[in-house]
Image: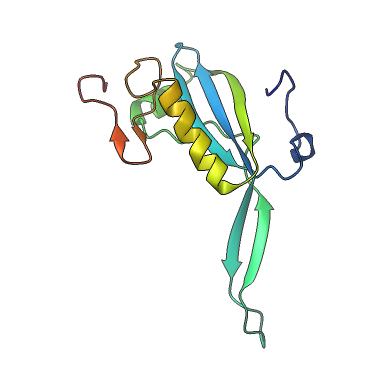
Length: 136
């Protein structure tokens, strides 16, 4: 959901959008905040006789994406059905990779994700970590 509208196709995003900032809520009331790119690019070896590498762009798995959290216990509980995904919300659409990184960091600090027990997020940019006394 974003601006009260559900997204099912890339064409429903603002033209030029490269990704979005999302928040997912689980059945236990806890949340996870992150970012997701709409497209992935890969460099392939050149075709026979060519010298330049080929660049292939394809749509990511954004429709089914449920977060990149590393918490093994949470992953087990989701797999077993003890915890389910309640809702996914798009907080912001981003028009470039810089905005994707900036707004993810902005929302993580704005919502106080590292100091709150309400979020599963354990670090920001690999530089700021959840204090040990709050980690479970």
